[in-house]
Length: 318
Length: 221
Image (cartoon, each protein chain N blue to C red):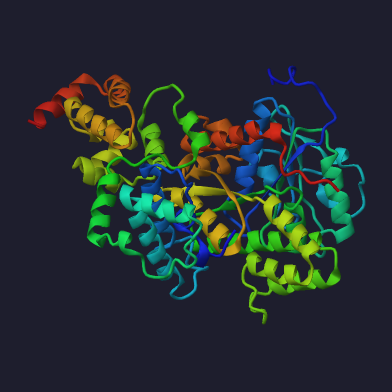
């Protein structure tokens, strides 16, 4: 808070940080809540958005009792102005948009409403918008993840999580590419590539690039640009051995060598009993046990995010 | 990026052309883990035989680059423009290092593991404050070492190392031994041993009643 006076209030687009990972239960909400608190405590204006309309729990991680208003109101066209959905949290500088009371029959907004939502998120008066995505690779989830080029992918050191993380990263990448292509034909080729059993034998983005270049060099150029800009960031949550710590590097290598996707290993959070305890008490571990292992690792990652803000690389417009 | 089959030794190990010997051995060990049979990162991605083929490529790359002579020759061939197109082909003569020699070299280079290349985190690792067990554990993980690695190098029992990391003072032997253990541990993970031991022992002695210590010291004799 002491810092906030020094930061001139400027009308600048907030830094968007979508947090996904494909698998449920790997600690996305835990990571979002804790990073949000560290950033807010360091003087940043932060909005944490719960995008999980089917299993909202970010409010619980932040110790906010069952919120009355939520993103569901925006989805159902009851509210147009996201500012009206902002809820104060116990932490100064940190506001929440919850995802409670969603319509379980049609939880996710349609595509045009999603685009409106993302536009509105970018207009929030904040330095950081952390976006907690639901599980799976639903089109809506992938769209949210693409709100920036360098979203966070949370992985637990277990086979199922790693496997889902790959599908998630690839799905995001292909979806991004599909949108980057101008011609319908090329979009179809990208869609074809998403089906891993395609007859053309396209297995990696690199194969796909060759295929597209052969048809249309101009589209090939757009492809390469998109490929270069996309840079997801890997976070290993619940590391309990050096092997788990190294997993982030291994995943990065596999992404690069086998999918042609460059990613960054932003860090790991140690497995810590205090983390579990904090969740049970509906508080963040960085607040409750700031000297615990998990809190120290989370703070490191938050600080890393902070030092990068100046660059504001990877922001997409439109 | 070029397909794996066309990558040179530097690309396959994901290192720069001016990589230091430390960086090369670290990259090699990391690659071994990534493409190992029990790799968590790879099992759902690698096709049959694919990991094996890459492992062979990695071994060749390491054999060439870890030896100053053969590396120089290889660099020359790269600079000459006759880029080795296919790494799966049999290595030229200057790569004819014995596998056992490679294994021996890896063993020595692993004596002091360099920190993992999470450079941005290194600076934070060096911030002040006391060295308690948790901090030692963080530093160890940061260097990518398991308890067993330290145990085999220091000959200290893994359970004592765990007690040190968990600050379980009551389960540790007399201070004189603990100081020795902590010093060896710190050296092993590349920390300033004197600084670490002083800091750790201060906590240890503050929090252990002298009577208990004396009792244990005598019992230990």
